[in-house]
Length: 198
Image 1 (cartoon, one colour):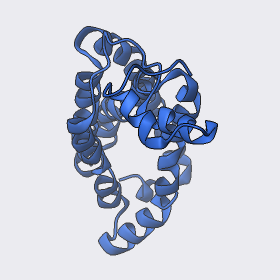
Image 2: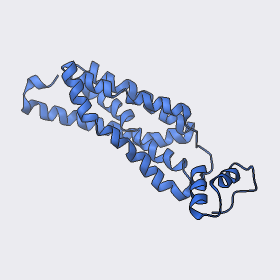
Image 3: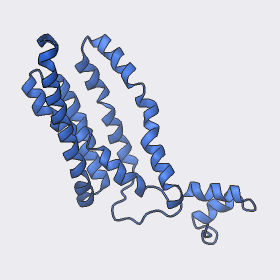
């Protein structure tokens, strides 16, 4: 869309699209906590994942004019960038206090191992399709994975923060010695006694 106009003409256009994209992302980040508090974390993430799944391919495949890109970019930014605010709300509510920071950091950064392949995949798809737009639209389908994962996720709105987890109790039981892993498991699920205060 822009390459035929020359470098000098493209720079202000790219700057404007980037600005509208970023502005949409900031507004999306500010709105997600309100949605999550009102309707729940899973609903908020579902709305954002679905919005990004629709907005990314639409923006890259259907925005054939500069004005289309300016109008579509903030919508894409709202959903695709705004969803990251949901992780900061949802992840801490999933894990017990003793491992909360480590587990949240792991969840935030584990995906980077896979996303590191993104530039290579984008290059291969661009070469295969002959254009950048179908490559990014294809990569944007990753939001579908988020929708699938949400099916198995638990809602944390209004729930007490977990103090201990099954894995935490099993590991501590094993590390402390004198208690079997099996005993820690049985105590955690309430079959024998109550969970000791670790």
